[in-house]
Length: 135
Length: 292
Image (cartoon, rainbow over all chains, first blue to last red; front, side, top):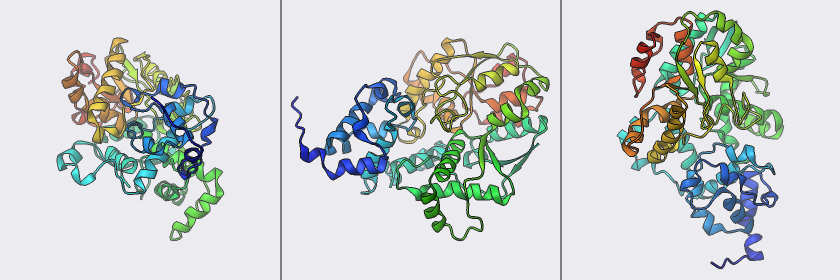
């Protein structure tokens, strides 16, 4: 597969936005892959955590905004505490989610959850889920 | 010994077994627990976006309630409340500009919060103030022959500046279980995420995590898994229904809050354990061991 990397993409506003929202310097990542090696959600992810960082560095906006991975991340911080460069990968995942949520693109549609769905889980699950997955 | 206590939402409903057992055990240990007169949701998750200060307000309001109770520290039982309250506190302590902005949202509060409340988890109180050695001396019913795997999950131990123990190899719960007379079972999944709030929209994913975590504990000989978070408890206990449907080789295992085991050991009655709130019934095992 050919991948087109361009200055235009790298300098896109999207890259700046992800850095600002996450508070992370994306270019500090040298792609060792330790975050992906220890991630408990990696089995279901379409883009691995280290690839999320790489895509963000290079301004692959569409690919990131369509990725399932950011919604599979449960902010368990295993990647954050193991990164040899001190990059907070969970914060980068949050920044990608926030870009979408701030445009009202909710991941969980609350009206679509049945009363039974809502009654079957504790308050702590509902509140944290809605805080992470709705705008 | 007197402590201010912040319960959080789930401790008053699904996790009443956590609260009742903890309060009974603390009474037996001579700790005077004062619940905050007023409190609100902590926010459940710490907001990770740098500009999202609004979502820290709920935690700050609770910390103001602690100041109003003329206390300088607050104890939580729930690992999520502990993590969120403590992280917000650390954030405003190290970032005066953010604190200033937050104050402007809360000008009706009588106290301008300064980051001067210490957020502590019950495990820290037991380890540092009550002390495990003293707990050992108060054990009336040792948890003999009970093999307990302690599951720490994420938010008690990560991130490092918040965690109450080693982030890769925590032992505080195992140390407590040993003091209570139980046989601690170490297992490699003890800090692996249970899937947390994914349980609402992706219960199948959580069922797979529950499978991996509990099968690992069982393979090491655990008869029961001890937890300290109401969301982990829900996923590891109630999601066993989905886990058993998905994985034919799965064997159900009882999940107990560490406080229920503590309560049994220090002589609390069965009514404080609220064993009716469990999906996998722990009573047969506890009866077999002569603990209830």
